[in-house]
Structure formats: C-alpha cells, structure tokens
Image 1 (cartoon, rainbow, N blue to C red):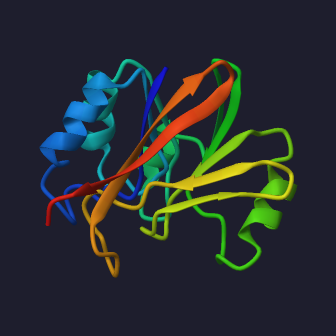
Image 2 (cartoon, one colour):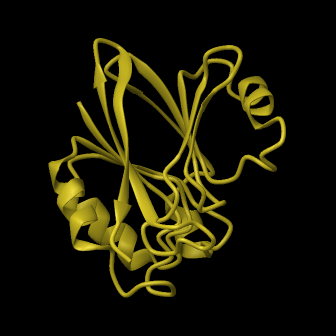
Image 3 (tube, rainbow, N blue to C red):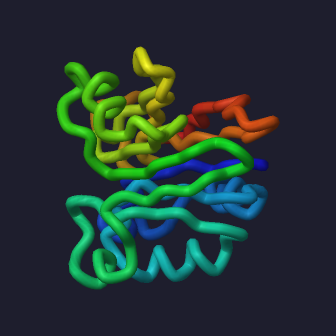
Length: 165
C-alpha cells in the first residue's frame, strides 16, 4: 500500500496550487494523508476527487467550512498499521513522550503545523512523522512531502521528497 503524506499546503495563500510532482504522487498513492492547514475548502474537494482514499484533519488556519467536514484527529487502520493524524502536537521538547501518552494505541502518528520534516520513534515504538510543507518551506532549505509504504503490517520505505525551489 503506497502512502502520500502532506500537510500545511496553505492553498491559495502560499501557492496557487500544489506542485505538479506532488499531484503525480497523489495519483500514484493508495492513500493520501493530509495533516491540516488546507486554508481553502476547494483544495479538499480537488484532493478528495483525485485520491483513491483521503484521510485528513483540520489545522489552526482552517475555518468553519473545513472544520465542519474534517475531524481534529483522524484514525485509520492501513493493512495492519494503526494510524492517527493530527495537526498540532505542541513544542518539539518531549514530543515523543507526550504523543505516546496521548496516542497509546497507535503505531504511526502523522502531524503538521511546524512545516519542519520530522521522523522519530517514541520509547513505546510510536513513529512520529511530519512531512513539512510542499508550499511554504519557512526556514527549511526545501519544501517537502513524504511517501511511504505499508507492507506486512509495517511502515516501510519512508522517503522525504524535496521540491525544487
């Protein structure tokens, strides 16, 4: 199962559209995961139409129309991997411990908000992933997104993709 993981797209405020390579990855994915800060409901509609399966949450920059259609926390089981998605996890200090306490029954937690790519494992084995942002790199050298595969009940081949400036 192929996953595409993104967050903090901020369309149309930070970009008019998602980068072409990200749209190609969306179309190749079995599941698309978006960890919030869509900004405009149009992107939700277009991404839902172009995805085989979409799992998404709202972020702090998402208004009432997006909050009416998306949860604060999404959960799914993907081929044996227990997944949760949330936009904000708080400060980076003690993030692994805090998230392990909040999501004790999850294998992988996808989050956004910081625009900073993140891939760590909590002491209890919880994998934490932040794809960065494909449209607003902030202080990062590149705009980014993630792809991964779920095989035999495990998350494998997690790849951070750098987008051209």
